[in-house]
Length: 353
Image (cartoon, rainbow, N blue to C red):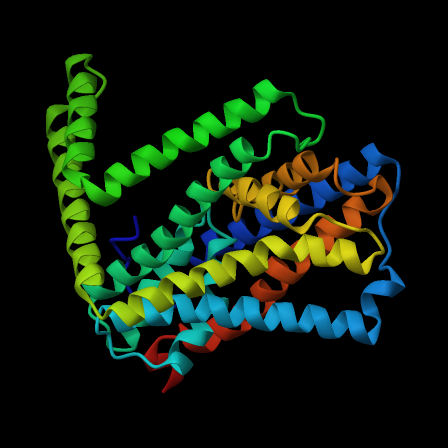
């Protein structure tokens, strides 16, 4: 959970610049390596931009989807903040959309995005605890939607062939997602239960002489503080204005729906006849798997997961092009904007003065 933040002033306000450069380099390396490998494997070579994607009507539809995608992303955090009674305008939140995209994709497990959000909100006058709660709840709403949609799709659409996968493989993925959902709901509704389980696991490590007792105590205290902060933030969200909470949930669903529908739009523009619901359901599974990719921004793993799960739905000659265009529109473009916005939005006040 994003309950802590590095507050030292090192020129960025976040982690060291060397770490960010390393993360960006690994992101580019993994992404390029996977695209090269897929192109070689499929024997199609480096894809060229299809003229159908740059026709005026196509550009208008892509622009519409992008506008909804970015605005919904900003709205979901804005309404979470409104529910928590944080005095931040929508105009102040929108730059954070791109800042978050950039930092999430140059840090492992997208952890940097949460730190960047908290740091940015603190600089706009939001207290640390409130900023951490807003960032966490924003993430939780999206994860909850994905963790529910993915197993429902896999269980409710048994006739769908995912990259030639067997029924056993699909069922296994569904079971894993369902188990994560159960654990996630326990964290959401009964965090003290999960704390006891984790404390017991740490005690076993101490008993096995794999962990020192003093370190176990420090970790337990840190977990207790994090869980308390999360529980308090979630209680405030539940007790806040209902209209803002509902708006946050609807904005989250709109954001995810647009994200998951992007490949179907690209397929339609390339002359295919995609099953939109199937593509959206498959992308919910891809996004779930991306949550656990160890590389910066899930680079490499996301492209492979997309190729593996969507290969049965996209013509081989267009697979790499669709993957690249999907990642370019939803990630690379936002990262480029975020890199520029971050220079101004996160620059220390003294430097700006």
